[in-house]
Length: 187
Image 1 (cartoon, helix red, strand yellow):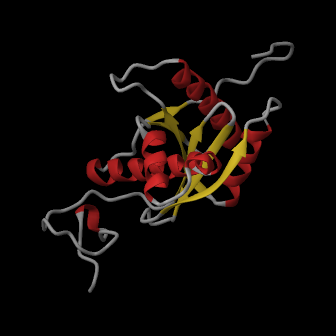
Image 2: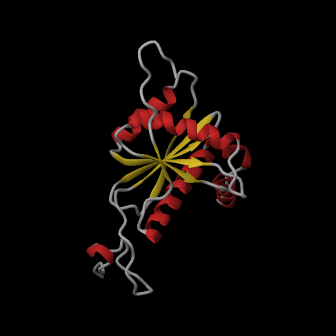
């Protein structure tokens, strides 16, 4: 079967549109997904076509910021076109302490990976869904901690790709790196 045309003259990733309607084009390129935790950071990626998201690794948080450097190195190695950081909002959409921490982490990542864009993507329930998926796969609950952050990062990437497929625009909000501190200033 050949790929059918879509809006913008590009082909749908699977070459089949059951509704027969034009689907918005999905930008090509690897996306890196980040699930920020207080102890660990889950990292996932998708292929350049945006078809398959897969876990990469779990990075231990470090006080010296080495975890951000490790993520920046992964972004370079994988030639990521953007980094998607999960924003843990409550079901009502409110932002609490975890969301504030994720925003701060996203700014540090944006500074480390510039000029690669970083986007905050709503990740409500991804960790809960990741635990459920691991349980359904037969992985014992006590072993979820080892990979749950990676699975949640996969779900962040998948959600962002789905939003972009449906809307034709990238998911989430762009994170701007902070301006560098002047000599003698610490931020």
